[in-house]
Amino acid sequence: MSKGLIDIPLSCSSFLEPALNCYQPFAKDTPQETKDFIHQWNYTLADTVKDIKNNKIMGEFGQYVFFVTLYYPWLWQTYINASSITDSAMAGGDMPSWSLLYAIRFKISMDLLKQKQSTEQNIKLLDFGCGLSPTAVIAKNQMDIQDTYCIELYPEICDIYQQTADKMGIKSPTFIKWKDVLSNKINTVISMGVFPYMTKSDQLKHFETIYKNIPNFAIEIKYNANTNTPDINGFSNPELQKIAADMAIQPDLHKNTSKNATKYLNLFCRNLPVERSFIQNHRSLFLSR
Image (cartoon, rainbow, N blue to C red; front, top):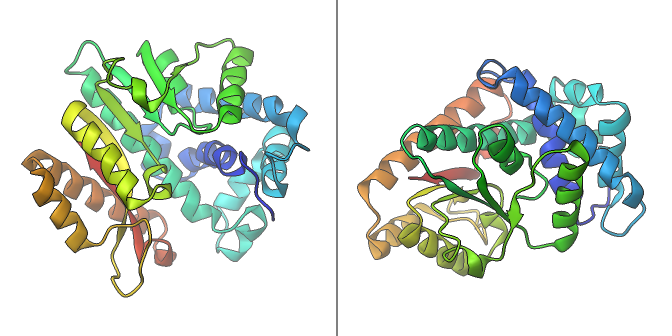
């Protein structure tokens, strides 16, 4: 299936909902109120893009995602519960693995926000590369983090995001540019599924700015566990060690990163013990502080 500009962002949100219902511990750890919010967000999101389904920003895959979400949402649960990768191929590939990754990203984001809310009074949150994920609107509307901001490269995605929030009758985050991050006194950054699409040099520039100026963050990068298989935007262990030394990374980052890496692998292997090929070479690594 061909893919358009909004296809992957649309799938990130649509696949999240059944993943939170299917996989443990997400099914029991995610409040029903949050699941209901995500369900309504996905339905409204699909309704928002309905008028642009033939536009060049949506490919065949995006039209499929929109159609299933709006009219046959139970199919997502069927695909994620599929017994093999082949069973879910018609939905865009390895849906069980991708949806599990989306659930892990969501859990790490929510865990960070809950932890910071328990110790800090004034969180100023940035969802860097929000796509069409409901993370920021959940933070603003359910967690009462009023200073909530988003950065998104494509104005078309920003428009769809804000239209969806308006249709739901909820408060939308404020969209800003990267150059405005420090002036808005952002103190918490979440960035999932964004850094690996940047060049390594751009990833390092952004991370250095965040590391030196933002006290709280959860950032996903890609870790290349197999040095015989180069990954243009993923980091090898020697590269990570050099970055840590060059930037004088604090011990707490090492500790949290190691803990999150172990948690990620354990969650993945426990929920999908057969489909290890998804994380065999290019694993997600979650940097947090």
